[in-house]
Image (cartoon, rainbow, N blue to C red):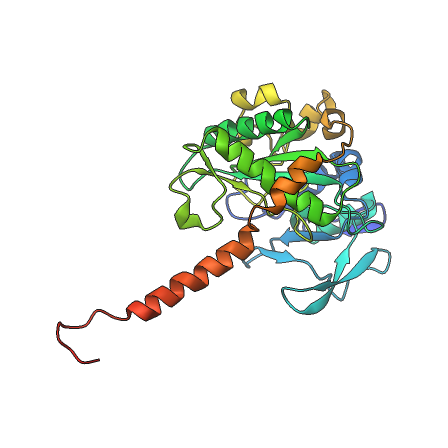
Length: 326
């Protein structure tokens, strides 16, 4: 029978239940892992509006942005307008161990903070490129594309840190000294285009999936109110891998499955913290921002292209028999 526990005044329940099908881990494993990495993870979550992926027993996983009504009053929240859903959303701020343990008890497996802190909502702290290999491709392809981004950064006089996404991709984080959301978004687009230009047979910035031709997608849309899975966050994948920091020269010798809720605490204890790998914050080069302003915004471009294709299909109409009048 599962024993309940109390940690930091948080009642932890049903700890010996499986976390989800194929996890190879229990809810206790999730709680113990998040408790073990709390000191490394909280600084990356603090004062950032947080979305989580929860996995409740007998239900499909779901992304939770709005905190539930039963959220304890000691969990700090921030209300923000969500343009996509046209409503105010009350986001949690995970600023301490107690809150992280409460989320763990809610079976929150994944942690997706926004890129800004609440005291400066129009100044992202990092520029992020999300490197996503095509369906059926392995991590090696993402690593090759990450090295293109590394080269593009160096050519621009910038330095970044790299981590596994915890799934099959790679995230590149570039700490930014002081820039607006619009400037960071423009610079991100420019860097993606520059990396694509180095090896267009390997990487693409095409937002529409069917236009990628089996290439690695350099996703430049992680700006504004977008979220990115946090460093050390578990992922809802078999074996419960976690997003883990790496040195650039380590990318070729690892696999995402090397870093899980079972293995990561010991690896962190040996000295691989994210903060130590992160360069100092840097100003964005003006030419990079100006170049990016000329690059179409991927989501907007995709929306217009989708409308154009739909209009073309309507105009073509169904293929009827030859000679038919209508």
